[in-house]
Length: 112
Length: 116
Image: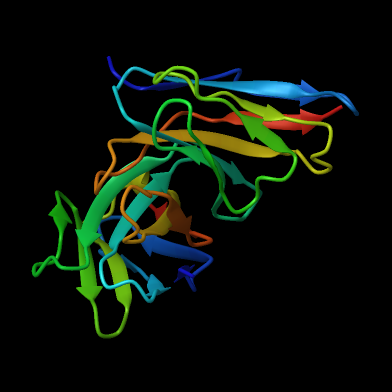
């Protein structure tokens, strides 16, 4: 079945460590997105990519980095510069123009 | 800038009753889209319904309908004949008119609990 796969489901980070969250889609969607969700909050956009080898910062990009080397993949790295990384991270994709975004099941990141 | 406001942090509804979840929005764009998503306790975001700003009729998808009042900038979600499985967080979201930019702005959500 087509969909979006996020891994791992749970991730723990030590102080000063970079960690990478995986997002893969087989929907042949052009656009991909990373959101962060804090408890009791809505989703906030971290980064998005409309096409391969291109991406733009969202509303809260500081302390995060992404790459888009393949259409299917949009990994998110949470760097040591992100001082409050504990959150639920959701990846999404869409065909550009007007179609709803489809989401993965999320990765829950915690600090050790 | 776009803004979505959901003023109901939580709602309790008796099973089989209809429920309305409120959403108001603010934008200077002439063309925009409004979405509703459901987030169960497992965390995934499930797309429910979409309304375009130029759509003349209110969107409907099964038990879900969107009460779109453009002049009042409101896009309330109506769930008819609620079921226990409807218990979840519900988010209203907006997409602007910037071509090629499909990023969404989300509200803070409403936690709906269906009572047997």
